[in-house]
Image 1 (cartoon, rainbow, N blue to C red):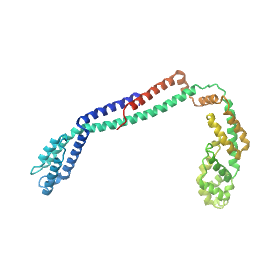
Image 2 (image 1 turned 45 degrees about the vertical axis):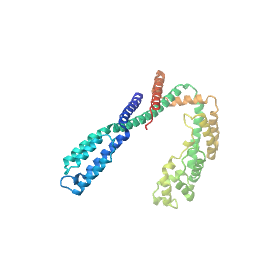
Image 3 (image 1 turned 135 degrees about the vertical axis):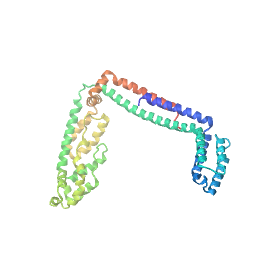
Length: 372
């Protein structure tokens, strides 16, 4: 849906709603609703009694029906639209004998009278269409907002210095990432599963080190069984054994199967990724806070890697960090097609069109009253 579609649909729906409301006001909403109710009640009476009050049916029901019709008509407001139609219906139904044709003719008269309620029905339909048009316009506004953000991001990336010496950031970051990955792999492979999982559990104190917490049953197992002193790769090897073979290696094969075999995916995916920086790096403030937390965490299992991490943190204080990072982000994220669109000015044109569309949608939504 485009701007013209959403705004035109909204304005047309509003115009339809207002026109329908004028037709309702010309008669009166209360009067039309009263007429609508009267038609529904009379149809219900016909349905209730037709089988018993026609022909030679139940005479008591016939008398009761005529009495209820009389009371129904007498209770109608004198100013009710189409009241004379109800009076004529009453007169016809007060005959000494009623047939199915009488009931059919009365229903036709009710249907004709109910046409007077059409403006009310049309107004309610118009209100519903208007409400949906407003919701559609708001959805389109959200979409346009996202598209504007996307184009603004492209423009920002396009302004980056693509020739900036990003290796000044990349080399220290890659050196740290490789060092911490190797150190964690060694820690995971050589330390006991109990020690590794306890380490991971302590990282919950550091929200910028997003390790997934160990499952409680797995923690309980490594603390309560001798097999917990084995490294994680050995536990995973045990989990693949048959129960009969596993009985030769651990005291409680069933417990290992329950607590380790069911957590293989967690153990297999446990790596240094939450400790790495990656490329391109985050904004300076974000990276600085990440480094502050990671220094405390990395020091627990790889103190010799802390110096590499401090070197990464020092990057965030460089006066050219933002310029180098912007260049890195642009190189990584800008596709050839996006670069061409930036070069030709297509992105700028799209951004101008989208901003105009956003303004038109906002103006229409603000100008036209909410659904009441």
